[in-house]
Length: 416
Ligand SMILES: C[S@@+](CC[C@H](N)C(=O)[O-])C[C@H]1O[C@@H](n2cnc3c(N)ncnc32)[C@H](O)[C@@H]1O
Image (cartoon, rainbow, N blue to C red):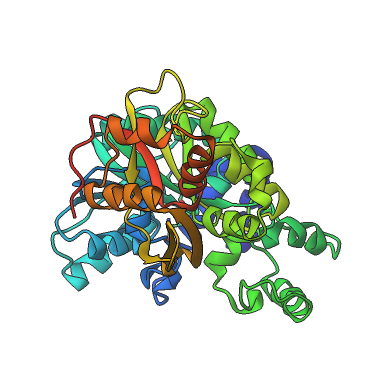
């Protein structure tokens, strides 16, 4: 009898409830990541390095003191941030009460100190800032907005939670996410893909998919039910190209300050001098263009409060309040080329998988050394550097590669 009532409930629900409510139910049923698995992000393998988030998102600013983890699930992402920022105040929210209960229980058992404040809150709620307190230096939101029908509403709410000079890290699905091809393929076998049903049949088909695809995402057939419920079978998916995410972010007053794959993509373009046709596109449009040619399955994006193009290098007219900062992401070795007035500069950034060499005029190499030492370009440095088109193009390339970033002139001194 009970089974029949449950089934009737489910049928009525599916026709009446919104996809947001169905997403919430799915995470209530299968909190993410599941309790036994620490998940990839607990090992820090899925979230990008804090140093990159800081250098690109908050150039010239010190360590974040207040951090919001938006859509924290059972708390893995928040615990990673706690380990990275032992002194910061961390607030972590999710609209699934069961996920928050698991996160709190785990915290009590582990004795995390100082404790993370786990709270139930809906990111689409306009009153989010008053619920969580606002004034955050850094917000991280990983694997959440891909499943929310109106991500712009969340982006606006998160903007209201940010302190001036703060930044948002967003991890969202890209066009090349496996689910983009996988869902219609599963549906062609008559399988429902808008919620987790017929799990055995689903796993059989995923086994076949795995055998045919080596897409770097591991064995889908053996993933947890909470992963499959969210990342393969869910009521709503935004698997978008970066250009689409950027345009949604613009609607909420954000600009792309960098993505984790932009430096490597630009380096590939620059290896044979193909970057010339990309000039002078700034970081946001560069990242979007390169993603169109080489689509990502998952985007790791740093966003800042700015209008389209405002974070571009070299700073154009009307951007007097912005300065160029040294990000500190690269080590640079300067080797004098014997018998010439030139220097070979070797740039290395293992965390971005980028390594390149450039031959610089001795005066440029000296200026690079000054920027590296001071951390921030003075007005004199910028004026001198911008005297030739070749130098402007070089600085533009460095901005795309993440060697330098644009920040506010009023930002506090770089903390080293
Ligand atoms: C795939 S999990 C990611 C969890 C965590 N960010 C991580 O990477 O480990 C997505 C989470 O977003 C939460 N979520 C989805 N929509 C939400 C909303 N409108 N408000 C708050 N949380 C939401 C879900 O409940 C779920 O816990």
